[in-house]
Image (cartoon, rainbow, N blue to C red):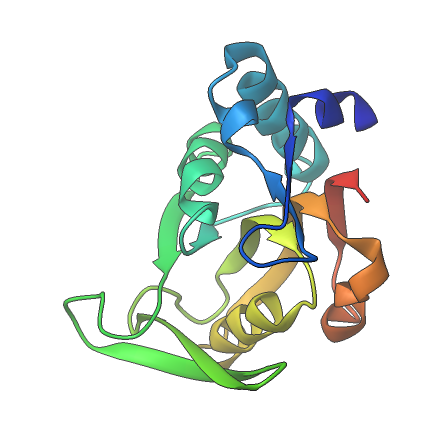
Amino acid sequence: MDDLKQYIREVPDYPKPGILFYDITTLLNHPEALRMTVDRFVELFEDRPVDQVIGIESRGFMFGPLVAYRLNAGFIPVRKPGKLPAETVQEDYELEYGTDTVEMHADAVGPGDRVLIVDDLIATGGTAAATARLVERQKGEVVGFGFVVELLFLDGREQLQNHRIDSLITY
């Protein structure tokens, strides 16, 4: 699946010196690459029943609804605190220097719902793991994770043990 790499722009020293940023906007604005990305996610998960697809703020919102549509599933946004209008459930996770929080509507995942979690990139895995905990606290089942890009050198998979993880592009 590395053929998708040609559509990823590498931006050195963003957002700070020493960081190489993998920019997916160049993939998004290329119709064939966007279609290939969504088709591959669907192919990876069409053999498993999926009731809901979660997209993690914010770039997961770009792929999640498209994959949900193709899998005949609902879409759930997972956001930073204070962005959702109704009652929410929250989950904290560790950052290199502190903590952060994600939340979703309290009624978004029901008991037994089979949930696919989609995002543009997995780095350290903290946000994805917190999202999985949100689903599991609501008695849903995480059927897998789909990432466009995986940064293998940051070992994000370690936080997602016992879950199916599929990445389209690895660095």
